[in-house]
Every structure is written in structure tokens, then in C-alpha cells.
Image (tube, rainbow, N blue to C red; front, side):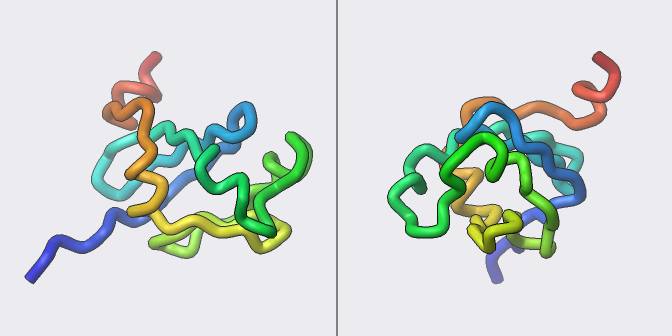
Length: 89
């Protein structure tokens, strides 16, 4: 049986199209979601980008209903670190 995707426990919108999230595995990912800009509901402005408003376990959802699954976001990771290490800095 395969390993389950990590669960998102905290999320922050950075400068568009970057998003950062912490997982239940104690890892903080910073991901560049530029590859999704062609999706119809992808946020059109920094203001919309900052309206990332909920985590539904295996996905991150914006107010305008754009969503990305954790495994998709992880595929575009530009930085990976321990979330405990990040909190200490």
C-alpha cells in the first residue's frame, strides 16, 4: 500500500504565485504554482492570491474556488525545510 499524502496544517500566500504550507509531517514547503496560471479560476491579482482561505486536508483552496492538491503543489517545491526549524528563525 502506498504512502498517504501529507495533511496541510497551515498555509500562507506569499508573493504570487508562491504559496507556503506546513504539513502534519513537520515539513514546510514553499511552492511555485506558476504552472497553474492557465487554469480558469487561478487568482488574477495579488489580492485574490492572498485569499487562500482553507485547507481541506489534502488540498489548499482559495476564496474564488481555485484549489491545488498537496501532491501537485509538492511537485513544484522550490524550498523544503523543517517547520520547527522555520519557526525558530
